[in-house]
Amino acid sequence: MTITAAKVIVCSPGRNFVTLKIDTDQGVHGIGDATLNGREMAVVAYLNDHVCPLLIGRDARRIEDIWQLLYRGAYWRRGPVTMRAIAAVDVALWDIKGKALGAPLHELLGGKSRDKVLVYGHANGADIEQTVEAVGRYIGMGYKAVRAQTGVPGVPLAYGVGRGDLYYEPADAHLPTETAWDTAKYLNHVPKLFDALRETYGFDTHLLHDGHHRMTPLEAAQLGKTLEPHKLFWLEDATPAENQEAFRLIRQHTTTPLAVGEIFNTLWDCKDLIQEQLIDYIRATIVGAGGVTHLRRIADFASVWGVRTGCHGATDLSPVTMGTALHFDAWVPNFGIQEYMRHTPETDAVFPHDYRFEAGFLIPGEAPGHGVDIDETLAAKYPYNPRQLPIARLTDGTMWNW
Ligand code: GCO
Ligand code: MG
Image 1 (spheres, rainbow, N blue to C red):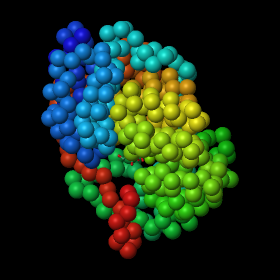
Image 2: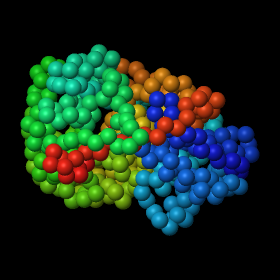
Image 3: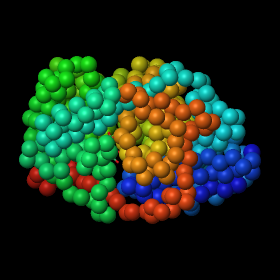
């Protein structure tokens, strides 16, 4: 089965997506997601100039060999652009293999370990009262797990406070929106949110919170300790994780479960975190970490140390990633939870898929491959719309982590 064409499709049905479509001489095609929020065109160029020409004429069945070619052959290894390009090729080839064999991807991975995939949604509000109401709406929709993010008095444009209830698109301007951040105000305020949430809803709903790289290790340890009575499902991105050692300090002070990894792109970003059990959930994704082939390695490594998966699944990961992730989530023995921010109706129309939401879970489809396709005619109606993620500065002007 020979690769005959590889095409990059950029579209923006509500937000930008980069999709790779691979055609073969057997008339079977596959698609992969290569979206990198705010840096989409870097991956488009990498694919068009450095990857697609390499694929033509190769055997589409040799997924591992092509992965190794694109990883080792780049010389300049790792990084979000390279690994998203590799992920797109990998996912498209797994999709082709499934279609050629008439098998859904989860069968190719080893079969289902579960029939349905626990997910969590994003509830947010400008203040505690609104956020408590938003969490109630998610519980009403059947979610068993809800992430809660609230505005912080004195901190305009706080992270995670979206526009609308079901999806939160942070890349909101051609040039980065500048936001201010004040960790002290945040640390004083967030515990009150979870006091109110547990007071209102008790402990039957899993609650999650995203620190979004804002705290120092000690501040993260303080927040984790303060939130212990609320028994969070996890505290995410408690501190920037380039320094994996930083999580040792947090771990020493709190039993609040820790999750990290949505911006990781290889096992090397999280090897120590996993091996030393400094985290409880690894958030690396199919699109961000080199596709099915590499994420499977990360998950298997994590399973040795009892670390579970908690794949990132924000709106900026296309339905192609969500569809593929659900097959992965159905198989992976050390599954934790899957993030599920809904896509806009326009996005769902461009990317027809067979997964569905049911009472707090997502049910993966049974179509061969990953079960997602792209309507190229419809996609063409939504041209690329340059957008970047915000930046954050501390109130004294110091550049910080958004
Ligand atoms: C999450 C993420 C998002 C990111 C977004 C960036 O936990 O879903 O932190 O909110 O900010 O994916 O593009
Ligand atoms: Mg996050």
